[in-house]
Length: 450
Image (cartoon, rainbow, N blue to C red; front, top):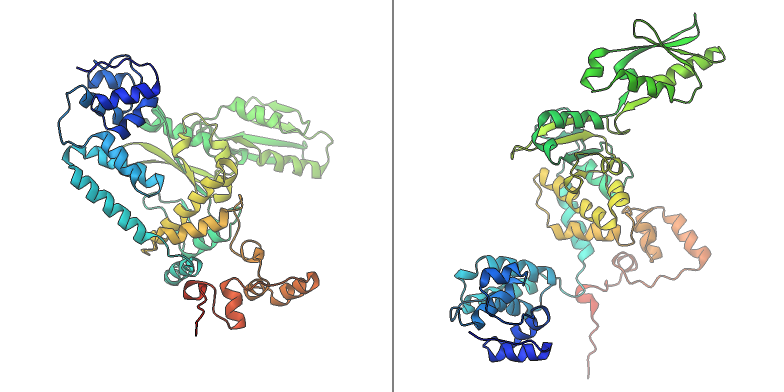
């Protein structure tokens, strides 16, 4: 068994090479691995929190490894040699480690060469008109989309906008979708206990006094009378005291009296009729419980036995603070809200997810990269912008391109007033003036020599 005394990083590297470790692996592990002696086995090394890729080589160095087998260090080195993105490298390493026992060095190289070849083929050629291709790829299937509204399968009464209207909502970057909805995943006992999940649903669902009681304005005694419904209070898990406190806190300086029969009497301070009606409206629309904007919350059991909530209405910022909500797995279809709460990258991912799921629901197969390009264009400035004259199309540098899109005269007049120049670099403006676009085969200029 080899013994290595650590005196410095370079000494460690030399000693590791002398002990039988490949030079590249020695360079990798000299920074992170500095034990005084290598006399431990695989399990002990792992317990020391040394990276798996290094553990294998240490075992081999001690003379306990099998000759010819593909080590974790080999996978690390061979994958890192390839010129592919880091994300693909990480995914490759993870998958290759899982099947390492079935790999030979030849197979490993074959797999990596094929991955590199497929990656090169998948890359867009220089000066390709990707915008036109993306527009065509989404626009053509879009002609087959329905104009109807569908609801979630199995959810029943909660309806959400799908099909073409939903795609239009997304690319228009609407601040509020026509049917906002959330899918709220639950944590701990809330996910396994239906009663707890239903309690949480009642906690989220907005409840106004008009929903749990009968409200009447009496001109005889100039008072507003509230008769609470016991069944509704029980169903919504609301105490009478909570309602009384809410009424007292509405800020009308009106004294509240609890009658013997349980009714609540709210006196109008200055005995004016319009003040009575105003008080009645104020009491009626007072929120007793829940989050404003979440009209309904429905409990559903998923296929894995876990309970979750579907809501009609969305309030992402407020839902974060509710106990029992697993916020990391909860989603909303309100992209503007996602951008505000979670940031622009989350909004970009939401645009891709929402568009892809809408297209798939309609049975349309569109490559995700076209949708990704649209999402990137909408979010590249750090805010969600619509594809329209108030967003991307209206901010183009080309005067002719802006004029071709919408409000032709206004755009040309505005450009003339400011003395703008059109460089004719894009597709639209070159088509207008009748010359080849500077993309694809038009991107190069050939000079003939005589």
